[in-house]
Image 1 (tube, rainbow, N blue to C red):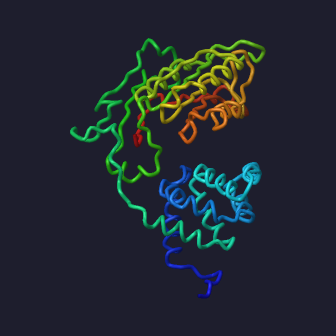
Image 2: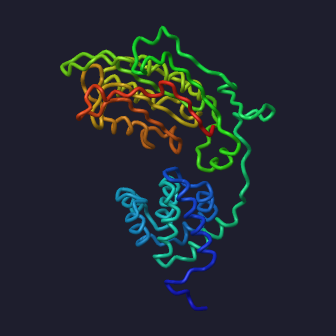
Image 3: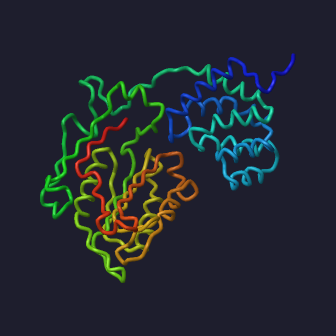
Amino acid sequence: MAAPGPGSRSALQQKGLMAADRRRRILGVCGMHPDHQEALKKNRVVLAKQLLLSELLEHLLEKDIITMEMREHIQAKVGSFNQNVELLNLLPKRGPQAFDAFCVALRDTKQSHLEELLLRTLSGLPRVLPPLSCDYDLSLPFPACESCPPHKQLRLSADTVEYSLDNGDGPACLQVKPCTPEFYQAHYQLAYRLRSRPRGLALVLSNVHFTGEKDLEFRSGGDVDRSTLVALFKLLGYKVHVLLDQTAQEMQEELQNFAQLPAHRATDSCIVALLSHGVEGGVYGVDGKLLQLQEVFRLFDNANCPSLQNKPKMFFIQACRGGAFGSPGHLLLFTAATASLAL
């Protein structure tokens, strides 16, 4: 049987690529689609035995699916089978475009039989909606959420409001509204599964009073921001840790301690909120010294925080970034927030 020419494409390929293109547009910056992960998993043994990596890795590198360090790490494994396994372990973590880029790379490196195997598996996967999250009590009129009963609102005490930038609106009123069934059914495949109780640990670190040579101003409204965030995260089902007025060294040590908490293993996500003065790429401790944000993120990466591997880690940074804005660049986050989440 004659091999198809480079410009030809089977109906199976066209169907699979069209479906993949739709998923890519929908998923945006989310993780790899569960169906793509399943297709890789079901064909893992065949791929581990048959993949030819020499040119394939160059294609994935060109498409920014892997980095040079990742390529070198894969190539350092002994034997083609171990190298293939390393790539297959890595792919599901490389974002929503990794599967499509992998299929294109297979085709371009004359391994179309493996691409067709993946697409055939993908087209045969069942399309069954999972049950709604346990957050929803289906015996009640929808929506209902155990972490936020219907119509429940949380009003911050006026005693906590020393001064804010809310134009005199008064204490913040928070309400968490669970999503509708229609929204859930349309988006559940794009979301991380947050089923743990608590949903995760949250750390809110707020620096208000500053010393040191930088002569940084008192952060008016900082206590309101902290109280509002703490209230919101609790309504969303997180266990909240609060730290106040930390030096740069203390911030780093406390963040490292928080990242190493054993409780992360039993939860599905993590939140870190840093409220302080800052510059581009860093936040100030109360001693006027900088903590680089890249160092903060490094503490929670897969190598340093394996308990949170493949779990969403959300960072909220409320700080000026220097430049022309100066002090007025202060932002008041979630002052009167209503969050609509697919929980």
